[in-house]
Image (cartoon, rainbow, N blue to C red):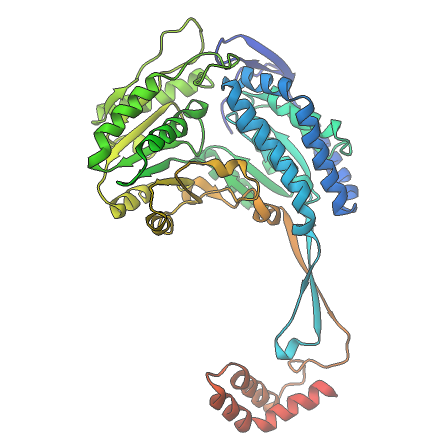
Length: 528
């Protein structure tokens, strides 16, 4: 479903995007082995699902410990394959993944344990009920290269927390990072086959999504491929959680702390070299602050240290591939041709490294005819526009095919709350951006072309569970709606509607009086 690196006959070659040197090779999973992995996962899952919830919690706690034990090796792998700075590998990958495992371990019992359901309705008072949250089976997890550990490990951990097995297909650009997911579960003592990583290009991901042995799909990637995944899952009525593209807006109000807003925009636009679905790609600033904001953001962007992520001082690494850089440069050129102006950047930096680097770029203006208005840039660039009131900013932010996140920068909680309620996104942050990606108690997901469903929080766990009602009746009373029917039954049921739901005591008493014979018939029927 996506293009990738050289896929040799039997192996994937991983390339460092900063140096273009080979990082390593992993075997490609052949189609027959995929079927075997799914079958093995199902067997492991069926046994695992019968274990107490506390067993799942302890396993996930051990996964977090295993990650911490080998944190440096994992971080080096991530940096070498993705090119991101070392600080981001720790902050956005290891901390996020470990915290997800910890949150699931501490909360899954409370979220997933059997829940008592009461029946306060008069005609159901004799009933008792429980809601059970049961596993779906085998979850297909397909993830991209921009967060090559955090995303697959979070999704696999959520699958295990809900009693499912997980088959993970990481990006063909970052196979070594993805391989750590299975290894960490192995070290934690997971049952063999419960969490498996399969390696290959988009065709393997498609085979996994279409395989009838999988019972749910978790996909993170582009909106275009997400639509194909949704169609493939829908063809067999398979539930799917889709975390897709984003084009997040930043709204700088006229009372904002300008220092904080500039610093936040710098990080939000250029973290991970702009290759983040919740990265800031569009900024609205009022006229009184616009020129100063642009000047300061451009000046700050020029100070970002570009280089290989293994250097702890580096703040901006390369784009992940030549194809990704070429597409990004096409979008920038199109924006400029349609009227945007370059405040800083716009080209390739001078560096001794052979990798796919690009300067951090600040554009002024968002031409309505440019591709950059409706397509993800997914690179180190941000567009700044001038808008002068909260309503204009809200309408501009919502005028997008995407709806993942947005941030509001203001000193006024009242204005922030009023704007947040009208922004059509999955998340809204005030005076910060996208931090809840690292908070597993918070739901994560978008609207429109940004996806369907939620990961994280209790809502993410429910998305991977069957909610089953188990109802009980001691059999001592006969339901009034059972056969036989007749005039008296109809009269009694009509009286019941008025007696229970009419407005005001007078109307309810009148209903009882008018339909007393039918109600008496129902009472005798129930008590017979």
